[in-house]
Amino acid sequence: MASKRAAPSSDLAALRRVFDKAQRIVVLTGAGVSAESGVPTFRGAGGLWRTWQAQDLATPEAFERNPSLVWEFYHYRREVMASKHPNQAHIAIAECEKRLEEQGRRVVVITQNIDELHLRAGSKNIIELHGNLFTTKCLKCRTVEKNYDSPICEALRGKGAPNPDAADARIAIENLPKCKQEGCDGMTRPNVVWFGESLDPDVLEKSHNELNLCDLCLVVGTSSVVYPAAMFAPTVAKRGIPVAEFNIEPTSATQHFGFHFEGQCGSTLPAALAPTESEQHYKKP
Ligand code: OAD
Image (cartoon, rainbow, N blue to C red; front, side):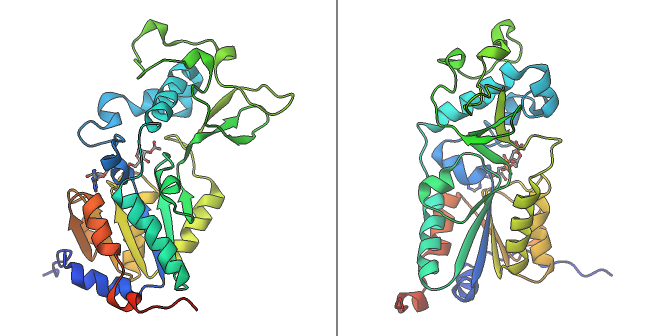
C-alpha cells in the first residue's frame, strides 16, 4: 500500500526554529499578499478574472485586436494603485530583509505581482516575474521605461474600469501611450507578461539561482496555478528544503509543503517573521 503523505504542519514554533537557522530565504508572493491592501486578486471573490476574461485583456492577441481596451484595463489598474498602500505582510517581509541583512543573511522576494507594493514597503531584493504596471515597452525601439504618469495619456483621463462590450472602448492608436525616447514616438505596451508569453530569461535565471540556493521558502498568497511560478516551491520542497505556505485556504500545491498557515497573511506572516530569541542577542559587527 502506498504511504500517505503527512498533512502540512501549522506549528508556528517549529517554523520559527527553521527560520532562526535559515541563511537564504525566498518569499514567493502572489496577488493574495496585496489583498489586504485592497488590490483585487485574480481568482478569488471579487477577482479580476471573475469580472473579465483574461483572453480579452491579458494576451498579445487581445492587444493586437484592441489595444485601446487593453490599455484601459492597465490604466485602470495603475490608477487604482494610487490609493493603495503596502500592508502588514509587505512590511514584515521588507523589515525582515533589512534586519537579516545586518546579520549576513539574505531575504529575496520573487513576486508574480506587478503592483510595486513590495518596493513601496522597502524590500530591495525583488524579482518581478510578470513585469511591472509602472513600466512601458516601446513596440518600435523596444525601450523599457518607468512611467508613473497619471493618467498615462490624455485619452484615458477619467476612464474607469473597462467594458469589453462597450462600443466607445476604442481610442485611436495615435492617442494611446507613446514612447518618450527622443525621436521615437512609437506605440508602447504595458511591460507585463501576458498569457501565452514567455518570462524574461534573465528574470527566470535569477529566480532559479535564488530557489536553488535557498534554505527556506515561504509561499504567500498565491493559488499556485500559473506556471512557471506554480512549480517553484514544489521543486524546492522536493529538494528537502522547508517550504511554508501562507494562504486563507489550502491550494492545489499545499500537499507538497511541510507547513501551511491558514489565515490572512497580514496577520500570519508578521508572526512568522518577527525577530527570534537568538536574533535579539545579535550585535552588528
Ligand atoms: P490568484 O488570484 O490566482 O490567487 C490569490 C491567492 O491568494 C489565492 O490562493 C487566495 O486564497 C489567496 N489569498 C487571498 N487573500 C489572502 C490573504 N489576505 N492572505 C493570504 N492569502 C490570500 O493570484 P496569483 O496566484 O497571484 O498573471 O495569480 C497568478 C497569476 O495569475 C498572476 O500573476 C496573473 C494572474 O493571471 C498574469 O496576469 C500573467
